[in-house]
Image (tube, rainbow, N blue to C red; front, side):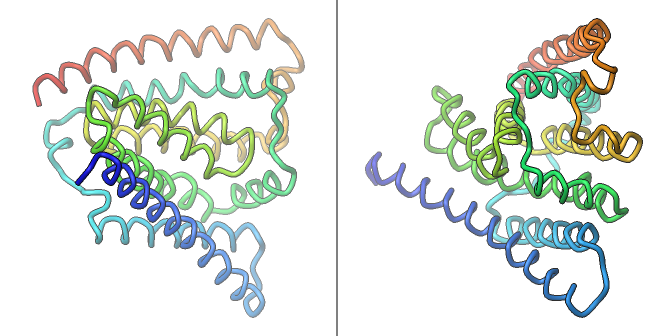
Amino acid sequence: MTIRNTFVRAGVDVMLYLILFLLLQILFSSAAMLVGKFVEMGPGVSMAASSALSAVATIWLFAYRRWSPYSRRYLAGRPWAVLLWVVLLAFGSIAPSEWMLEQLELDMPADTLRLLEQVMATPWGYMAVGVLTPVAEEMVFRGAVLRRLLAVTGKKRHWVAIVISALVFGGCHGNDPQFVHATLVGLLLGWMYYRTDSIVPGVVFHWVNNSVAFVAYNLLPQSSNGTISDLFGGNQTTVMMLLLFSLCIFLPSLFQLSQRLRRIEGES
């Protein structure tokens, strides 16, 4: 098989993964709308249920077809220290990311924001957003898409595969703020996947990120469409202190992961 054919085949496989991922979301969303005509339920419950079910279907399909191979090898090594640093990295990334979007003046579309608020307000919302979505998206974008791209680029050009998968991940979120955030997060998640050959660190990071968003909305629902500056009454000194505190968590965590994942990579 020529190099050109190898790239074409990889591109076709990636397109297949993405089309099926999006089709499952559309299918279950349409089914929820249909059921909603006969069963009284709010739009938040309907969207949360369809998101949860589409995530379950995605997990099953990608595991069954082995597009995102599952192995217990990584967890068998008991990487608890690494996962702790992943948790801290996720916490440390939230405020700087939100502040950056604020500076770029990127606003989420009103309809999208309203739908997310309705999902966050339901118990089903956490199961969909906080638990199932992280697993499903990591299986698709790291376990399937990035794995397939890495098979083509190899180790010498692994950053090409990581950047492409991050851009695809951002693009699938469908709006400017989430594109920027998801692309940057996708670079971190792709790097962790490349170093570990496992989606587990990515799932943990994704879970923390989405869980914080869910908890923050339910504790401070009035801040869902605001900014960090609004949260602190426009006090920029407090905002800068929060950013500094977050970076004091993020940067050491990133350094520790770089060292620990390098050690694991060398041992494997």
